[in-house]
Length: 98
Image 1 (tube, helix red, strand yellow):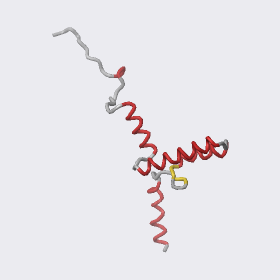
Image 2 (image 1 turned 90 degrees about the horizontal axis):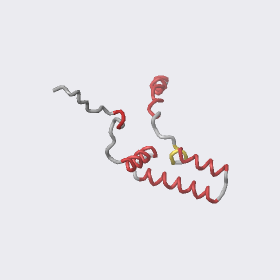
Image 3 (image 1 turned 135 degrees about the vertical axis):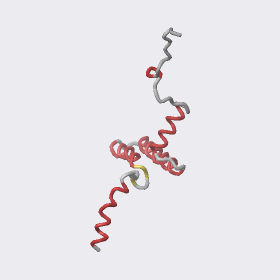
Image 4 (image 1 turned 135 degrees about the horizontal axis):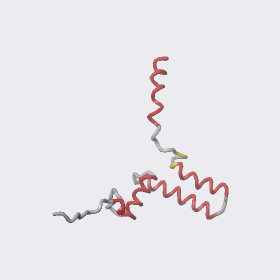
């Protein structure tokens, strides 16, 4: 039994990248639940339900929240994203010799 405990000691790192969950939802949706608890109104209830529904739909389609944000950002920016911004790119230089 002690040998199994010694092997289990090194397993804590494997769950370090799993997303934080709150009742089967991404924990970031819990912020709107806190807003609902602090400012209990009908519109905050609707907002919380809408956000939880959005997170559920995203996860059903195989996207995490951060992946969905990257997808929306790509949709706004477009497919071509240069590595350097325009002002930092090297300019062609004509020295006049030649």
